Image (cartoon, rainbow, N blue to C red; front, side, top):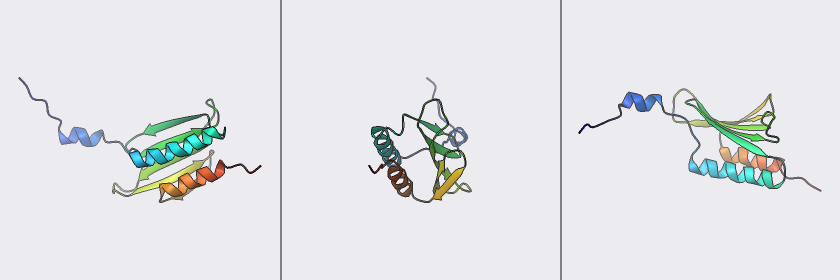
Length: 111
């Protein structure tokens, strides 16, 4: 009988930055609101060791309309968020609730 153990170096090298359950719940709630309004059709989620990215697509074959990015600075446990609008504009905020509120406001159409 052999015992397999994971070394701490293996665990540290494979650590990825991800959205928490609370954050993902906020983002998916916002996404479903945009889908119900007919503004978004698809999404993607990407994770790596430096950032987690949730992209909102208006059409499946195009570039993302919005990209919500969570990242760390200087290997500290403090997280920051930024919203990439289209290809160029970036909006940096410290709170995910502000970004989700901004996205929900963009989906409201006054008739």
